[in-house]
Image 1 (cartoon, one colour):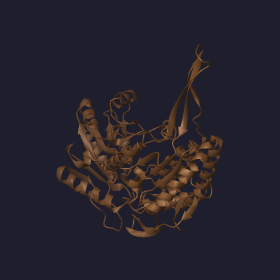
Image 2 (cartoon, rainbow, N blue to C red):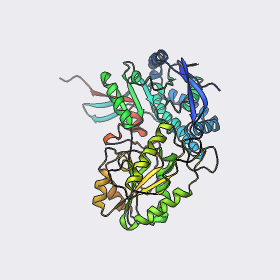
Image 3 (cartoon, rainbow, N blue to C red):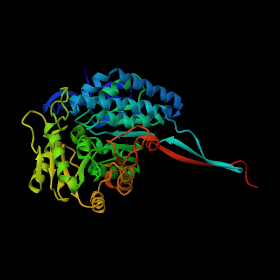
Image 4 (tube, rainbow, N blue to C red):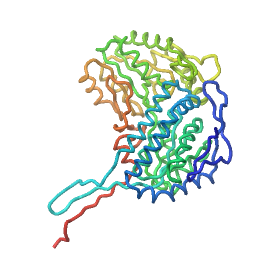
Amino acid sequence: MAYRLLIDGKLVDGASTLDVINPATGAVFETCACADEAQLEQAIAAAKRAFPAWASLTHGARRDYLNRLADAVQARSDEFCTLITREQGKPLAVSRIEFDMSVGLLRWFAEQDLPLETIRQADEGRVLEQRTPLGVVAAITPWNFPLQQLTLKVAPCLSVGNTMVAKPASTTPLTAALFGELAAGILPPGVFNVIIDAHHLGDRITSHPDIAMVAFTGSTPTGRRVMGSGAGTLKRLTLELGGNDAAIVLDDVDVKEIAPKVFQAAMINSGQVCLAAKRIYAPRPLYDALCDELARLAREAVVGDGLEPETQIGPLQNRQQYEKVLEIIEEARSLGNVIAGGNALNREGYFIAPTIVRDLPDSARLVREEQFGPAIPVLAYDTIEEMIERVNDSEYGLGGTIWTNDAERGLEVALRIQSGTIWVNKLVELPPDLPFGGVKQSGIGRESGLEGMKEFTQAKIINLANKVAA
């Protein structure tokens, strides 16, 4: 099929084309349209024209549009899941989870409304809060969850009455193009537009005077550039950025019971998850046993093409990330002990063996940075106080997990961790009704939940007296 841009309700060819690589082979498997700046300007202008009519619809009317879009996406489930795996690399079962989450987001946000709210009621009058849409929103989405990250922004944005220009990552543009194809037959022209580029239109989007808000998910360095670019027009921003999430193991657990959970939290999507466990802290009496179990799980994991049913861990999504992770592993090898993996696999594609490293200093890149790959440091601690101080000694603060057989003890530790979300005795869980986001340099604002929905609106306070004062 042809993967085209969506501009003003029409599917159009790009000014040029973009090659899309299958990370399981390292070879081009498809091409898609690539926009130039003139086409970006057309998309922004179309979204601006469409905004007044879309914003003036009732919530019920916009809900019906979003539910129809969710139905259309659901009807192409197999096509979406296969496409996600081919362009992103993740196992087909994980693509299915991403797909189901995406449809769920469309349906959940379609049902949510932000009606006029009375925040104070008195005999002499009342105070109301109205939530109004902002205008044209730009969504800039990453390559690790190309469909889920798109719908996480599209659904609340459109539900409250904004219009959108979406720019997917240049290495995973096809799912957004397919989504745009379905939207073209359902949404009014200009309400939703898809612009695909090769890293040359981002600055224009984030600085454009007709874009009211940028919803960005990606790395912290890029997030800083987005923030700086939007400063000239004081854009509203949500920035869901990098994480270096700690998995904290307390001393009352059964190592064999929790090791598979910790391993899954670290290695899902080949570790390419902002909320994945990226450094593991174990009490010294359990340290050797946990290292051994994690190393065993890493050696036994099936690495391969995501389309093969037995695959548990797929490739890195792109060569740049693949080379970065290998570089971080090489430094770790010189500073600690690699007890599983530690090498690229001798095959086509961007495959790295699941890697476990122990005995690293806290200064190692594998501990300090967001590796975003299947390489995990395991760190020993002696006291809870020492561990909390080390966990919090990071520029990041996105998420984290705690494993304990005493939930109250887990809560006590969770209250002291500097992050936006902490899961206790749970793998990463992101239901649509709960907001998430980071602290420190892991981001600004919240996504999902009613709090995330409100990010796409402006609050207006109406202070109303029943009569003119005497």
